[in-house]
Amino acid sequence: MLVGKKAPEFSASAVVNGEIVANFSLEQYLGSKYVLLFFYPKDFTFVCPTELIGFQNALPEFEKRNTVVVGCSTDSEFCHWAWTNTPRHEGGIQGVSYPLVADINKEVAAKFDVLADEGDRVAYRGLFLIDKEGVVRHMLVNDMPLGRSIDEAIRIVDALQHFEQFGEVCPMGWHKGDTAMQATHEGVSGYLANK
Image (spheres, rainbow, N blue to C red):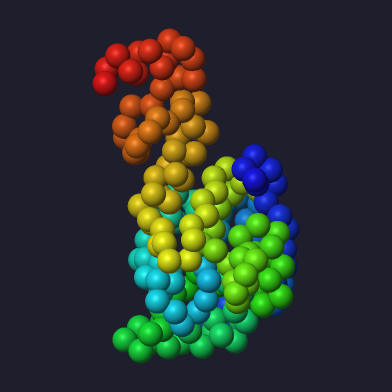
């Protein structure tokens, strides 16, 4: 369980906006950005491109929230590069610009505890919201056939930022603009009385 702890550190090759870069690290965002780090099983597969393209389409929403999106799988940087340069109608994800970390040695997935123990030993669909201080504030891990919700990822970013700004906690199903509540018995009672 990583929630409430510093996110594991790593340095790895990545593809960023179509270019291969060495020594990519989340440390560059410390103190300035929230990070939504997500793991996926493999490039050139089936559910994965729906998620990667979904995150790309939602980048403006994450940018409004001062949040960067970073993907990671156990493929090489060369595989990532080929996939990001393959047209979508041919099974590629051309146009994906956010960083895709290459974890061919499976070390990053192991540090985040999302590495499958059997079969190809690829990453489960892990998702981690890391705050500006480098602390994991939310994690979700799906089995490989189960795609994630981009809307839920945005909702969680909104909830964390609302809590940080106003000190109010966000009840079940809370969305930006909804009523939140104080973390007191009176706050909960008042909230529930209005439901």
